[in-house]
Image (cartoon, rainbow, N blue to C red):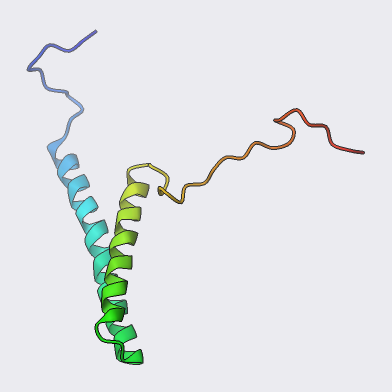
Amino acid sequence: MPKKPGTVNPNFSPQSSLGFAYRVGLEFLSGILVGLLLGYVVDHIFGTQPWGLVAMVILGAAAGILNIFRMLGLGGFPFSKVDVPKSEELGEKKDG
């Protein structure tokens, strides 16, 4: 049965939506912060200022985005596992 316009979904919770939004933001921010920390350490050890920091921040942001994809159930695009059919599923017979 279709809902009438203007009715509220009883299962909708603004707190859960806000919590989800905070979690998405924290996933992205934590990736960037870890990248900042690792980039600073790499630059300090190898003396490559500022390139280690720049590279690690970019990698941290990519990791944060990948975590968000996983959280949304998109399987960690583009590194999602591909289901390869087994030989039995293809109708091939085993020798022996």
